[in-house]
Length: 372
Image (cartoon, rainbow, N blue to C red; front, side, top):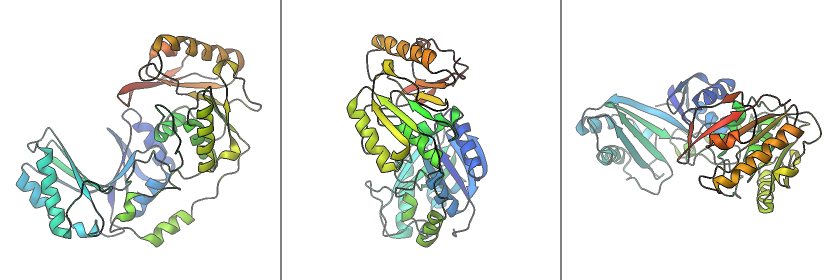
């Protein structure tokens, strides 16, 4: 497989949010983005794989699909896996591992499928796999159709490289980016999070307003692939547009002083400290900042993992009262797993998302229009 050979690229996403990831991919000029269960497919060469990792905010991982074939039994899987030009994909000096899943197929033993592909790669490269490798070959067999992909991201893309200080049950950056997009945020209005924790919503919004590439400060798995071209990658990064100038400011508040200190440190590492402010303050004391109205977005405790649900009704009620009395013209987005708590705000929600899986829970985004 050559540098310019066409690839099917799979952008893994969160079930229920695929349309938002598709829209983001389209806005960045990726070819033929199409929503599929669990993500989005696009077309492109290896440079588009690199660009997807660098630029996409909502994707969890970027997988380069390198083979697709029918496999009815293990011998057939072994034979066809050996036809792949592994030396054009993987380097013998870089550790790798193989992970397989089987569903509704005559090959039903994932361990046996893993072993067959491992043997094919080891014989081609002269190097055995290792469980400790961050470079993963993913084998998916469903309805007897085998797809083999290279995980080009390495660590999940929610790890931007700057959020070193986190609190309890943090919101992943990829989720935050898609929820901001769902609320219509495009970088042209202020954002405020009254329970900001480690600052994810605020920092993500500030980066979006500045036009910063989310992957600018981290390393990727594709840098260890045989197809990687260091000079071309450096040119791609050098051609990134300069940060957009903005007069907007982004605000986070939390009743935990430690959380505000962590968020401030994270914003500094992300390079957005000039346009973000984190303050130790309770929801009941919240007032709107000077300037135009914008978006209030919050991921409050649900009572499932943090806090006692019965005690949270007062918190949600206080938040709703503050919004209605002080934040005229602002839109509100609430992420929670509990409809009862959302209703306790007394806010009128014009849009409620379908349930979205998150850490063993089902969460939803509740949105208002501009408050009157």
